[in-house]
Image (cartoon, rainbow, N blue to C red; front, side):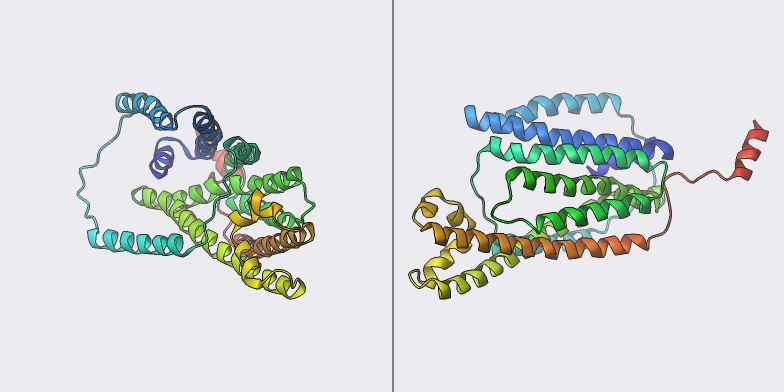
Amino acid sequence: MPITFTIVADIYPREKIGEFQGLFGSIFALSSILGPDLGGAIAEFSNWGWMFYMNLLLGIPAFFIMMAAFKESKSIEKRSIDWFGAITLSSAIILILLTLVLGGNSQGTGVSPFYAEYILTPLMIAVVISMNLGGRLMSKVSYRTILVPSLALIAVGFLLLSQMTVNTTKLQIVLYMVVTRLGMGAIYHTIGTAAQMAVDSKKRGVATFSPQFFRSIGGTIGVSVLGSLLAQQMTSGLSELSKKIKTFPENQLQHFTNLQVLLDPNARASLPKSVLLELQNIFSNSLNYVFIVGMIFVCIGLIASVFISNDRLVKPTTPSKAIKDSESI
């Protein structure tokens, strides 16, 4: 992905970069919709190994098309590579990720691939819309003008998600997530393009890679920290519940901090309805707390975006410059 967007920044004029960044991002988002749909169908009705063969059927023609059509200009300038820095940075990142993954609370719920796509498809469509809109706006307004309302929209989405209860419908949840993703889509390439245009061409690859790298690291850390926060809130809520319900020992209730146990139909059927309702409320309240904490971080980003400079992808033409240009013509 960083190489693709670096090439876009190199070969297209500034007034077209935002549009093409949004276009390529939309293609990526669309493939994120169609790919899992196709993969779910293959896993459900055929051999899952065909998911890998499909990549070969698409990847091999794309490889030969790129080899034939892509004309790259080579530089004869010798450049040194900081191998020691690259090795130590990679090692540190691997250790951090291993610590977060092995020590985290990652749990799967085992839902049907088609049900997952029923939830995910509207979210990716929202990203496609906002990516295209953000890409087209980049050539007309400043980066700040895009970032501030986008982050505000994410904050509103997190606020809505933090109000969920046991009675919230699936449609409401999807709508809340769509609001959040509409804000996220416009941010992705706005930040990346702003970083690209802030440096000279020699450093453009690093500038393109950095936002995506820190977004991935931040996402990994965020999922681990917020997952631990969810488990902590669940543990606290279950401890309070054990004091109210004497028929269930605390150590038995603590098993429900594992979401797989809480969502397991057999485990749910073995519980009295009153206890199950209490467990659902505890989970809902714990999840709301997680979204409130997430909203705080979004608001910090929103405040920071207000104070960034008013730079834009395409500099506005002043009247005096326009007159000079017309006279020269």
